[in-house]
Length: 294
Image (cartoon, rainbow, N blue to C red; front, side, top):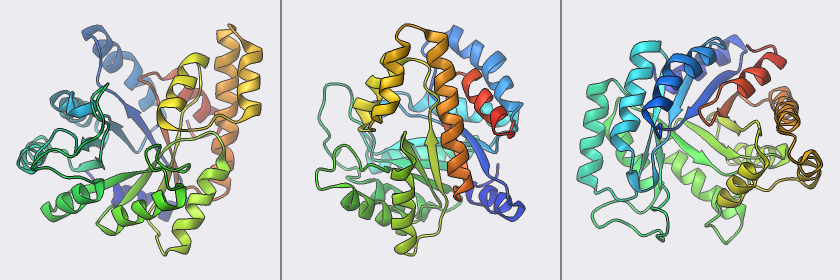
């Protein structure tokens, strides 16, 4: 399977944006069947360039994550990034995980510090890595991997010193060997453009992929935004509150907002779009259709 940096290089030469999707491991066998028989085939109609699969808090879905990545690549021919975190892993365990990844044909890794299991505070694992930058350096030294890292347009929720301090940590991850940055979800494009300008001024020129989520559930997006520190613009939340229990109206508004957001991002130079799908296809497919990218 191809490295993500090569995929972006080819699309840049063609003057076209990359399209990618994030998925998470399934909670039920029925969900897995539905994903591989309905959701993913539907999204493949949009001709995506690659996908990514998340990793549970504390590394709780490690085996499942890599199984899903291997199946997406093997059955659908879609290059896929496996998330990998520092949490609850020693260096020896991470080395074993990377060896298994190679055997499965997994060539792209999203290197993360990761979130601790629910109810626990972050702490470095004895014999492990403290920072995502350490993990990036280690993966880089193994060779044969494309490396993506996370970026936070509004700053990481745990960074109390402001977003520009957090962005310096991002630059460190990039200098340690990252090929690409995928951002946390955001709803105000000015945050993305500020981060893009900051990296450009620092001499960083790797792809900065905006993470987009088409909203289809008001309470869910409020929960997500609180967990990750992504602010919801006042005009945005006001409209959601006006729609109330009108689920179809919320879904249509989410598609409309995401479409406008994506169009501006692409018009102003974003190299692609990375969609947080929540393992669903309809809203994302609608946005891509609106953008004439389906």
